[in-house]
Image (cartoon, rainbow, N blue to C red; front, side, top):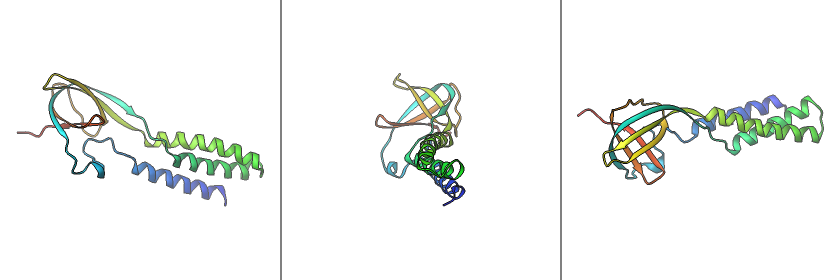
Length: 154
Protein backbone atom coordinates (compact mmCIF):
# COMPACT_ATOMS: atom_id res chain seq x y z
CA UNK A 1 0.00 0.00 0.00
CA UNK A 2 1.33 3.43 -0.87
CA UNK A 3 2.03 5.76 2.04
CA UNK A 4 -0.26 8.64 0.88
CA UNK A 5 -3.22 6.25 1.16
CA UNK A 6 -2.15 5.21 4.67
CA UNK A 7 -1.58 8.85 5.61
CA UNK A 8 -5.10 9.86 4.54
CA UNK A 9 -6.63 6.91 6.42
CA UNK A 10 -4.64 7.72 9.58
CA UNK A 11 -5.60 11.39 9.38
CA UNK A 12 -9.28 10.47 8.99
CA UNK A 13 -9.11 8.25 12.09
CA UNK A 14 -7.44 11.03 14.06
CA UNK A 15 -10.09 13.56 13.05
CA UNK A 16 -12.91 11.17 13.94
CA UNK A 17 -11.34 10.57 17.34
CA UNK A 18 -10.98 14.31 17.91
CA UNK A 19 -14.71 14.72 17.38
CA UNK A 20 -15.50 11.89 19.79
CA UNK A 21 -13.41 12.97 22.78
CA UNK A 22 -14.98 13.90 26.10
CA UNK A 23 -16.37 17.43 26.09
CA UNK A 24 -15.24 20.06 28.60
CA UNK A 25 -18.15 22.40 27.90
CA UNK A 26 -20.53 23.04 30.80
CA UNK A 27 -23.69 22.25 28.85
CA UNK A 28 -22.56 18.91 27.37
CA UNK A 29 -23.17 15.76 29.39
CA UNK A 30 -21.97 12.24 28.64
CA UNK A 31 -24.53 9.50 28.16
CA UNK A 32 -23.43 8.00 31.49
CA UNK A 33 -24.15 11.31 33.27
CA UNK A 34 -27.74 11.44 32.10
CA UNK A 35 -30.24 10.74 34.86
CA UNK A 36 -27.48 11.10 37.45
CA UNK A 37 -28.23 13.48 40.33
CA UNK A 38 -25.93 16.48 40.81
CA UNK A 39 -25.69 18.60 43.91
CA UNK A 40 -26.36 22.22 43.05
CA UNK A 41 -24.70 25.02 45.01
CA UNK A 42 -25.15 28.74 44.64
CA UNK A 43 -21.92 30.68 44.37
CA UNK A 44 -20.31 33.96 43.37
CA UNK A 45 -17.57 34.19 40.77
CA UNK A 46 -14.38 35.61 42.28
CA UNK A 47 -12.18 35.52 39.17
CA UNK A 48 -11.93 34.07 35.68
CA UNK A 49 -8.71 33.28 33.80
CA UNK A 50 -8.17 31.86 30.32
CA UNK A 51 -6.32 28.53 30.25
CA UNK A 52 -5.39 25.86 27.71
CA UNK A 53 -6.91 22.42 28.33
CA UNK A 54 -4.47 19.73 27.31
CA UNK A 55 -5.51 17.37 24.54
CA UNK A 56 -5.80 13.63 24.86
CA UNK A 57 -3.27 11.14 23.52
CA UNK A 58 -4.64 7.70 22.79
CA UNK A 59 -3.40 4.74 20.83
CA UNK A 60 -5.09 6.03 17.66
CA UNK A 61 -2.60 8.85 17.04
CA UNK A 62 0.32 6.64 18.02
CA UNK A 63 -0.70 3.70 15.83
CA UNK A 64 -1.75 5.90 12.91
CA UNK A 65 1.55 7.75 13.06
CA UNK A 66 3.49 4.50 13.29
CA UNK A 67 1.86 3.11 10.14
CA UNK A 68 2.35 6.34 8.22
CA UNK A 69 5.98 6.66 9.39
CA UNK A 70 6.73 3.03 8.54
CA UNK A 71 5.30 3.30 5.02
CA UNK A 72 6.87 6.70 4.37
CA UNK A 73 10.33 5.54 5.46
CA UNK A 74 10.17 2.33 3.44
CA UNK A 75 8.98 4.03 0.27
CA UNK A 76 11.03 7.22 0.56
CA UNK A 77 14.40 6.32 2.10
CA UNK A 78 15.13 2.68 1.62
CA UNK A 79 13.03 -0.41 1.27
CA UNK A 80 14.47 -2.07 4.37
CA UNK A 81 13.04 -3.26 7.65
CA UNK A 82 15.37 -0.97 9.61
CA UNK A 83 14.18 2.14 7.75
CA UNK A 84 10.59 1.05 8.33
CA UNK A 85 11.21 0.48 12.05
CA UNK A 86 12.84 3.88 12.52
CA UNK A 87 10.09 5.55 10.51
CA UNK A 88 7.46 3.72 12.55
CA UNK A 89 8.87 4.89 15.87
CA UNK A 90 9.25 8.47 14.64
CA UNK A 91 5.74 8.37 13.19
CA UNK A 92 4.30 7.05 16.46
CA UNK A 93 5.85 9.90 18.44
CA UNK A 94 4.71 12.48 15.88
CA UNK A 95 1.21 10.97 15.65
CA UNK A 96 0.75 11.16 19.41
CA UNK A 97 1.91 14.79 19.48
CA UNK A 98 -0.39 15.71 16.59
CA UNK A 99 -3.33 14.03 18.31
CA UNK A 100 -2.65 15.88 21.57
CA UNK A 101 -2.46 19.21 19.74
CA UNK A 102 -5.60 18.49 17.70
CA UNK A 103 -7.73 17.56 20.72
CA UNK A 104 -6.61 20.41 23.01
CA UNK A 105 -8.99 23.31 23.57
CA UNK A 106 -9.23 26.73 25.17
CA UNK A 107 -10.85 26.91 28.58
CA UNK A 108 -11.52 28.98 31.68
CA UNK A 109 -10.36 28.60 35.28
CA UNK A 110 -13.27 29.93 37.29
CA UNK A 111 -12.74 30.65 40.99
CA UNK A 112 -16.03 30.65 42.89
CA UNK A 113 -17.02 31.15 46.52
CA UNK A 114 -19.90 28.88 47.49
CA UNK A 115 -22.58 30.30 49.77
CA UNK A 116 -21.20 28.06 52.56
CA UNK A 117 -17.84 29.91 52.30
CA UNK A 118 -15.83 27.21 50.48
CA UNK A 119 -13.74 28.40 47.54
CA UNK A 120 -13.40 26.19 44.45
CA UNK A 121 -11.40 26.42 41.23
CA UNK A 122 -13.20 24.79 38.31
CA UNK A 123 -11.69 24.43 34.83
CA UNK A 124 -14.11 24.03 31.95
CA UNK A 125 -14.53 24.98 28.30
CA UNK A 126 -14.86 28.64 27.36
CA UNK A 127 -18.28 28.40 25.73
CA UNK A 128 -19.88 30.46 28.52
CA UNK A 129 -17.88 33.41 29.84
CA UNK A 130 -18.39 34.60 33.40
CA UNK A 131 -17.36 37.79 35.17
CA UNK A 132 -16.32 38.57 38.72
CA UNK A 133 -19.23 39.13 41.12
CA UNK A 134 -21.67 37.14 38.98
CA UNK A 135 -24.05 34.83 40.84
CA UNK A 136 -23.83 31.27 39.44
CA UNK A 137 -24.76 27.67 40.12
CA UNK A 138 -22.09 25.02 40.63
CA UNK A 139 -23.18 21.50 39.69
CA UNK A 140 -21.14 18.81 41.44
CA UNK A 141 -21.27 15.05 41.09
CA UNK A 142 -18.90 13.53 43.62
CA UNK A 143 -15.33 14.76 43.65
CA UNK A 144 -14.49 14.44 39.96
CA UNK A 145 -17.19 16.31 38.06
CA UNK A 146 -18.08 19.97 38.60
CA UNK A 147 -19.26 22.71 36.29
CA UNK A 148 -20.24 26.34 36.58
CA UNK A 149 -23.63 27.22 35.14
CA UNK A 150 -25.13 30.67 34.66
CA UNK A 151 -28.14 31.27 36.91
CA UNK A 152 -31.34 31.96 34.99
CA UNK A 153 -32.96 35.35 35.46
CA UNK A 154 -35.69 35.20 38.07
